[in-house]
Image (cartoon, rainbow, N blue to C red):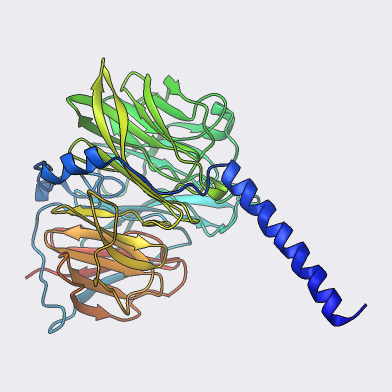
Length: 450
């Protein structure tokens, strides 16, 4: 056989393989053309969007994505002349591996890491980084890819802490009442065995959401894709759906006058009443069930986005009985704005977030990137919104401050290599002028007070 003939055969085989792959992707809904509702877009363009103000400074950062669970820092001081005076490191504390972000409330910092065959919840003094206590429990990471440690972020309210481990363990701790005391386990549940959930390829990642007397998690599984447990006893109060697990976390909001919970699973977004009734769903099947970013609720709208060539969608919540139905505004599929591990933030009718590895500014009402807005030199990362600025922690270990404006990308300053440059997938935490970052070996605190 000649080289030319062999090349032709390979070409034909390759063409058939690509066609077969494309057919499978299309049949599973991974590649669907863009769609938009012109009437909904026009209505949104003329609508005044109401968003609650940032939380009060005293609220702290008690849960994943901050007190309002949308990536906004609570009100408080922030010095923004980083180009002239970079943030000063106040302290550094060692930790193990993990993607867990930092919760900071009441002068204490909480996060999670892995220690060999165990996981750990750790508490540090937020002022100086000194260890206060640790709680260690066994965790099997043998079947978890990217197995450096926990993915979720602890939730702390009052004297209780709830944490989800990467191997599926959900636990509730009673916090110590005095220095020198240890936390006590109140209850724990294995989400995999309790709800018939498979262990996700990259581990269990849902950060606990506390709504009134319930703690809501997203195990995914035949016995409940969404589960609400009594926050004090761990008793299962209700379950909803049977969707496969994703890697996102639930959010709660009042939309169209109805209190709702939004759960982004491996193949769909569910709108769930606080009593566990699913009032609507929006199919969003993604390759690898890789729905990771947390839904962003703004006014009566819910925004979702996924990587792996998926895209983004905006849905309007319309009152329906005691719940809501989800009305699509647009779906940018395959080539739209694609959040990977990092969720977007919203300010003044624009979204700021990462399209795979590129930071972009996207019009909220259309899902289309702002022309000419080029964030060169930043790379992939995660971000939060602090008043009029974006605080960005990059995958490569850099710390950046940029203006949150659609006019153009305005980088105020870039502080290189404050982190290791490996596994920097946590989200920054800002409380009372102190900025907290972490990677796989350390937790850092920087002073950004005026």
